[in-house]
Amino acid sequence: MIKISLLPKSAYARNILAFVLFNVGSIAAILGFVYFSTVEVIENEVAEVVEAEIRSLEDEYRAGGLARLRTALSRRVEVADGDAIYLLSAPNNQRIVGNLSQWPDIRTDGEWTLLSLYRTDTASTVLVGARAYTLGLGAKLLVGRDMRARRDFQETLTEAMIWALIIVVILALIGGVIFSRLVLRRLKSIDTTARSIMDGDISQRIPLTAKHDEFDQLAMTLNEMLGKVEDLIEELKIATESMAHDLRSPLTRLRSHLEQSQNKLNNDPSAGAAIEQAIVETDRILKDLNSLLNIARLETGLSETQMKNVDLSALLTDVYELYSPLAEENGMGLALSIPQDDIIIKANAQLIAQAISNLIENSIKYAGEGAKINISAEKTGGSITVNISDNGPGISKENRDKAIQRFIRLSPERKSTGMGLGLYLVSIIVKIHKFELKLDDNAPGLSTKIIIPCNKD
Image (cartoon, helix red, strand yellow):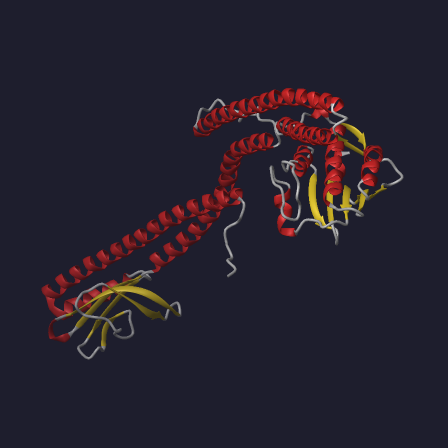
């Protein structure tokens, strides 16, 4: 099921939206309360004025009967403003005196009632608030007021509320932008520091301000954590290097002793073969230890001073000439295809050469006798692609991500006595250069590409 979210993905936009909605909602609630409260107050005041006038007319009625009430109403109708409404009618609803043409549909129990009446002087239907009573002998009295004041106030207040909400939205947008920028600016410093650490500079720390607020408290906590992580990494690095050095020295001496023993036992072919195999195994262990040392160094990052302009074409040519005899010795063909023009990149030449060498050695080791290995470089669009491909068994799609992990050896397709550090070391070298490593199907075989952005030139 596809879920559609109406909220923006950006935290910046969500903060602004939340700020605007909160402010608009708060102001709308306040204005709504003021609106309905004021309308109610106006209506209550009109109802009280009508009630007072009815009491006065009742006094006239009690003092002089229907005739005096009629006289009093006639005077009031003559001097009444356009909002006052009077009507005295007979029991059959026939008008006796007043400024209404006929008795409306209204209760006569004295309850305040709102009703719509047609005004002949303005030729319009208006809202009227009125009270009506039944007098002696069945006569009926109605006193009311045109609610024009309430209507005018409602229109004025509604217009004012609309403008107020528009102003609030504008101010809330401005406030939301300022608030979000202040918050996200602090978060940006944390993000920048984190990215620098991801790129290998573990000495970076989140900058503090003089405000000593919650963000500074968070930054201090994170900086303290980063300090402990850096100490742990440094201790691990020292331990790894010490272990590798401690192992490398006795292994080197062991290899030397084995060579001397082999020279002394040349007359005993079986003993010489065993010693030769021991030398091969010792060489493999030394190579793996060197790889571990290199990985430990590289995982701490690469400084800008270690990057130089490198002629990629010349580097690939040197690697090709170095590995051509080895490929031929293993019954394989090694070909080189590079542009005529020099390709200059900014990189550490020794590390790039090591990465390409590892890829060629992998092809020689796993592609099989008779395989064809191609080294190529191509500049297309905004990148340079170095491609080491072969027509061997390749690596299945589901195993390609796994193949570049540390200490991973694919089996049974790839049988080897190595520690599984070759492609991992290549991936580390590519990562610290901010290049891209991609494993593709060569149909058949494996195509390993190092993609170098041109802005690294």
